[in-house]
Length: 112
Length: 247
Image (tube, rainbow over all chains, first blue to last red; front, side, top):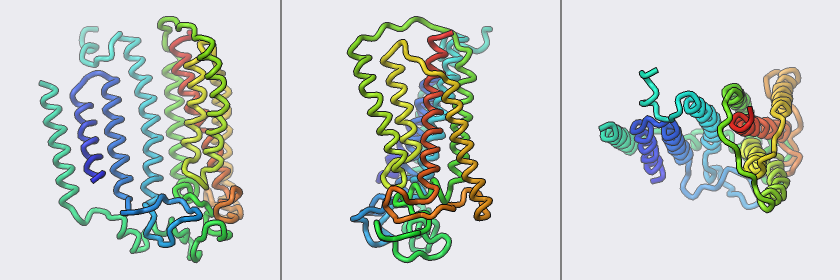
């Protein structure tokens, strides 16, 4: 069920990217889409009634009772790279604003 | 008009995704990967290089990787090369931010912040810093690790930037810390290459699963990652901030 909610988030993020020409809003859309994809990957590695993949004193005996650690490791990587993309994108947006005085991509082209 | 087309495209995309994934039953299922001895099962049982027997928390000695947190054992041991690349991507992002933000022009002055705000920020700062350090030194035992710990360190610096208008750090010192941490990470990898024959090998004894000094090179690597990520994100924050207010 969480799987399909995350697909909904991906679609919302796509709408956010397509529907506006404002750079900051496009970045927010990219972030929403990214969160959807991350949730989807983690949800694919879920086992029903699974425990967190950390050994502790009351950890389940069976191997099958842990959720997938590989998916979580991949999502950690993806979160960090998403942070880098967002930071770089925000600085680009800032540069666009300091040069053209607007965040709207439609109103900067052509006239100069 | 644009919004209608965007909405149509998004709805079509979402419907296609949901239909496609609910229709295909043979798409990857994690239970199958476990029962067939897939990668995840081997990572959980710590038997990639041969069987270790049953892993018991607090008792098993010298198991492969020896880290109680399995996600950490994947990130900092089995797929450590991947993490090295990831840290490099973050370094490139921070380099790009500092290059682009360095030439930005000043826009407006900041208001002076009050005494209560400044003092409480200075009171919170060491607590946040210590929590970040705790998170990345215990990355092989508890949830967390180098990336969340480093982000928490960076957020403690961000708090000082936001609360105190006179606060400034020297960006070059963060660059030096970041470079040293990255260099040590690759040096540890090269030591593994010399000792055991492959890059980033876990060449130290792994100790008892669940104790603080366990996991071989995992805690060392994770502390280095924590310092590197912390200084990188602090560098991003301070170059964005200084680009806006100074110069």
